[in-house]
Amino acid sequence: EAQVTQNPRYLITVTGKKLTVTCSQNMNHEYMSWYRQDPGLGLRQIYYSMNVEVTDKGDVPEGYKVSRKEKRNFPLILESPSPNQTSLYFCASSFITKPGQGPGELFFGEGSRLTVL
Amino acid sequence: DQQVKQNSPSLSVQEGRISILNCDYTNSMFDYFLWYKKYPAEGPTFLISISSIKDKNEDGRFTVFLNKSAKHLSLHIVPSQPGDSAVYFCAASVRYGGATNKLIFGTGTLLAVQP
Image 1: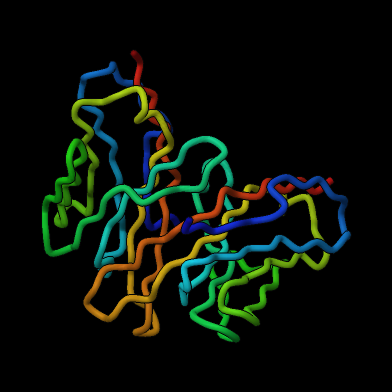
Image 2: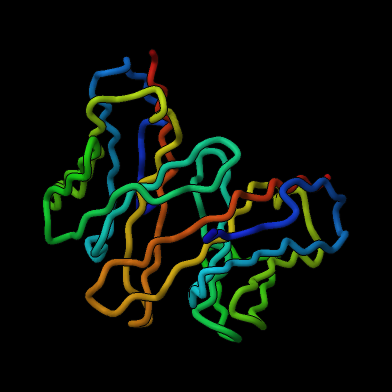
């Protein structure tokens, strides 16, 4: 079954304690991305990756790191979490389309709800 | 600066009637517009899209209308069913770096279809 898998689904942590949210996709997608969803703000992009070892900042990258050592995995790292990073996080992946084509369909994981105390 | 806006946080509709979800945007460079649907405790899933060179796209009960002069699009669901109750995100796409599309999402509209 084609899917994007995130772990953990729920996490409560404390300020400053490093954590990693894993993301894995089995569709051989080149493009992977992390979003956070907050009330009244919708989905905002944190980081994205066009392929292995190619990552770039999205709209709200502060306080986050990512890596793309393998095509299927795209972990999100919070080196020193703070309460303003309490949010619902989504990983997504898609194929990269050619110029003139529409965007590749984004497949989302089920989300990871993070609470930072 | 919210480039994609969904001004109605929620909408309630009777089963069998039409649901109309609205979305406004500011960037004339957007080349595709999409709707994603999200159920509780699940990730968003793609619903329907429209190219900026078209004004209508239909897929079964779902139709998206685009008014470029007004920078406005809408999603019509006819007839609405209780299973359509979900959060609907409008998204707009722009090519960046010549390589892929960036999606900018709106804030979402919670649709409740009453039986």
